[in-house]
Image (cartoon, rainbow, N blue to C red; front, side):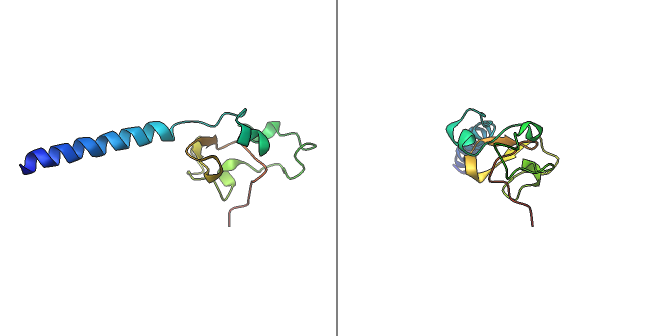
Length: 99
């Protein structure tokens, strides 16, 4: 009985893990309404500083306080965009310097 219970719990946990991993892989689309509202771009070097006066060279998602990934990661989470990932070289108007 313990073996069957252990097996079922392992299978259930594995399914949840796979579903979570697949969901976490979703990347933010630049055309998403929230992305547009925050001026998000995958490539910070393409930010129009006239339209986005808060932007300064060197500001990228990977050095933002909100970025939930390692600085070496190409993509990472951001609480502003839910489960969708942002590009580490991206930028949005909510950029905040890491402490």
